[in-house]
Length: 328
Image (cartoon, rainbow, N blue to C red):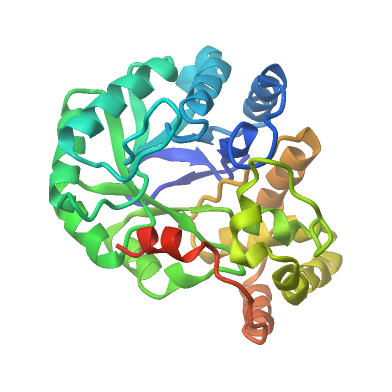
């Protein structure tokens, strides 16, 4: 697979990464662990070198899974994980990016990931109780100690990114971004270009909706957080079908699936954008990887943008209380 560099950091990764959250968190009953370890290793065999996890996924068990799966290939891959919550044994607890908590999370994540250095350490959500300069300074110290290689932020505003970057250069911003959620284009993507920061879209397939496999009748299993998302009510799913119709129409022209066009659209926007679609199925992994070979010309992108601009997406992406945590 082609490689991309996240901004000016020098951190080289596969053009498409693998988001591992859904392998045992927030996507219904967890699949068999051995099967997910095998899937991660099959991703490595296919050229994927960028894997995303977090302590909160599970909690804790997703890092264990990723660490076990990637231990034999550690020198060939880049592992990203995240801090930012005060988790009890049951995963409850709020935001916490105090320096002592960041240091504790780093040490615990290193053990679960079976490594001596975290390649990319994101603040999972901005903590308004802790100045971002203090957070960046703490990660800077961890980098100096060799425990972390690169610093990232997730769902941070342009102002927060700029302030953090002044203390410790930010390698990557991870935020939701796809054809049906384009808010980062307003200020975050221009700032990333200005400062030389890579951008990692999570939910690049709209939590599965942009694949065309979900309609208003699709049931979701227990522990699937889509049951709580306003954009996934049956009414919203029905109303948002035109977005999928657009992707499928372009796909017919390019001999590709809707999911592949959704990913190719992201890749065509900037050379430092690296989406991380998640999956638990090998055929979907292969489908996503193949998107990296689809070349959308500038006129293709303009056509998609013009058509998408005529579609009003229905439903907020998060419930109101959770959405408040993504605005800092």
